[in-house]
Image (cartoon, rainbow, N blue to C red):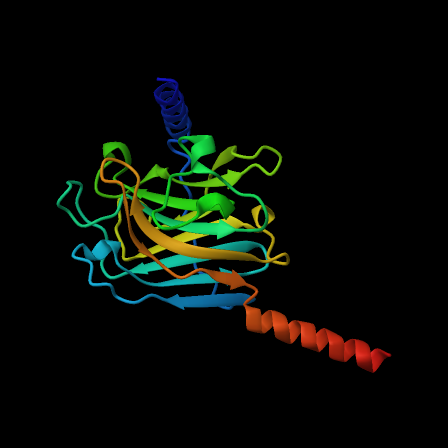
Length: 235
């Protein structure tokens, strides 16, 4: 009974937060044409019957002020019924260092991801399709981030994304997220992956990309070797 009570309180609280953010949806943005850093992750076609759950690739870009993430799907989400072609959540999951979240500690946030240890994830960027019966699109109040509070393990701060594409009621096979650089340090590095999943009546994980890191190991090694070379010359 205590567990049910906590889940109910968490669900009501989350609902209040999402209701309060109606009209505060993330704005549209343009992908940077010449980013300072970028990363591309190909994902194999698993042959999912619902092709709007099939990730073909994910991308990252950094322009010095903002982080950009992109998920490319086999097909655009469509419909609102259980037999239509969509996933309940399209997300980017970020591990920026020690600590992270625990589903058992927070009850509502974060949600579980099948086959993934979520204890190290610090930030989730979400786009919820057809959230709360909003219609066949990503509603403005269903675009948000969850950021772990480093001072309070198991506590997550809920916020509105700095940018999201496509804008409702449009649909696209390309889902894009924009995150302020103050919330995630590019210099300190981080790891990330993309996923399509459901956390509601049809809970399940459909497709996940491989986890990659910024900076990439090869780049980090080159930077280290370059630094050693410069120090030797200076000596």
